[in-house]
Amino acid sequence: MQTTGGRRMANVLLTGASGFVGGHLLRELLANGHRVRALSRSPSSDALLADAGAEPVRGSLQDQCVLNAACQNVEAVFHCAANTSPWSRDREVQDETNIAGTERLLAAAEANGVGCFVHTSSVSAYSHLVEETLTETLPQRGGESWINYERSKFLGEEAVRQSALPYLVFNPSHVLGPGDRNNWARLVKMVHDGTLPGVPPGSGAFADVREIAKAQVRAWQAGLRNESFLLGGSHASFLEFVQLAAQLSGRPPARRAMPQTLLRIIGQLSEMSAAVTGKMPQITPAAVAMTCHHLKVDSGKAIARLGYCETPLPQLMADTLVWMRAEGMVTA
Image (tube, rainbow, N blue to C red):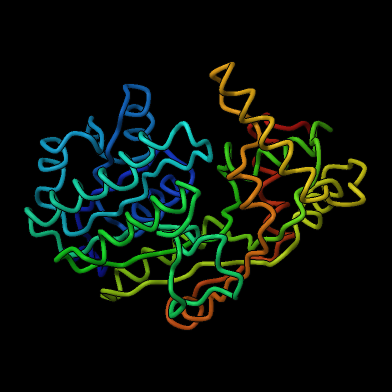
């Protein structure tokens, strides 16, 4: 790692830089003076990454030769790319990305003597089967799950731990914040547009994407290795989440959550319909199971050792809506 003007600089490789969490990681790495090589899958992504200050490398997690070349002369790999589909039909492509793609990237990093593999996993590696408050010492149950996303994140994380590389693993909970187009912002937009069919009966821990990026870069720069960190946030029921989104959007608030049994029936019918249409259902049985779950996360380790911050949900929601309005996703 070179030092320029008192700041230590390094060459790093980042996957998933065009995504939500990956985009924030890119900005945080660049803000700390590092040179970022970013895996890119299209010309449009090339241009966006170059404009942001990264060096685009065209290729995918399926191409071992590209990964080998991309890992040359880098001190760390930040692996943020993932397939998050809750549809059972996407199982094969999801495994290819989350498991096989991670294994290929690990092999490339190991062959090039990379100093640290920084892996963005998920609380889903623990699985909705776990009812207790999540801590880093609690056994993960993703390998037992019938939900392929949970299983694939568990197995991808296991591959990281079993490699010969020094690593850092991060397990964010429900990620929200500016830059969100396809995650919880979709729920916020449905509340704003009055198109939300019902509120799931579960609860979650809502983490600030900006703090997730800061925590990862801090941990790596501090020289921590072979550690895992849960990155949680404000705990709230999905009803409270939706009511807050309605309040900040000037919309009528929902009064109650949908019964779990009804939501499960809708999920099953939606998947049956999708088998005929070939289009991904808006609600899947996997999504139903995860949103009926009551997720509880203890971020104490990250708070104590990384200065991680849990942004209060009202502030996080407000910041998200400001960004969504600026992007034209919702009206002012």
